[in-house]
Length: 160
Image (cartoon, rainbow, N blue to C red):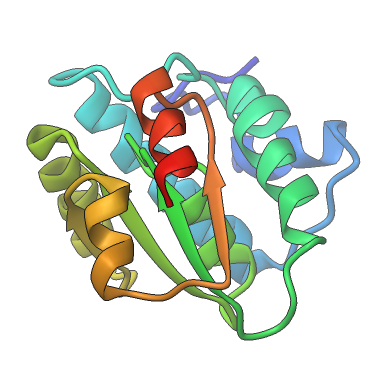
């Protein structure tokens, strides 16, 4: 499948979405493409994702996020716990602009990088550099989402 930066397909993300029978507006596809490219660019400096092809991005990151979003009500406040490179939070914010998404990562380097990605793609999402239990002491959310977080982060949910 198409690699980032390949010019063999005019719109490789749109082609990959079509091959997975996922139909999204052109605006959303464009924003997702800018996000994926920025994520992959940063991934060369700091390990954020193993999904560095459009096919893996769509089949794993996007498909998982789209599955999740159907359970979220309009206007929900969502916290992505252990966001890493922003999955699923950034994708949810792109495909569901009605959501109030925030990201949380206890690793300072990852929090700074995802904040840089968000600035680059001009997506106004708050990034918390803190442990989830600390964020939840001062902020309220309707839904917490997580993907591939450390066992210690999951243990923190038992403390809440």
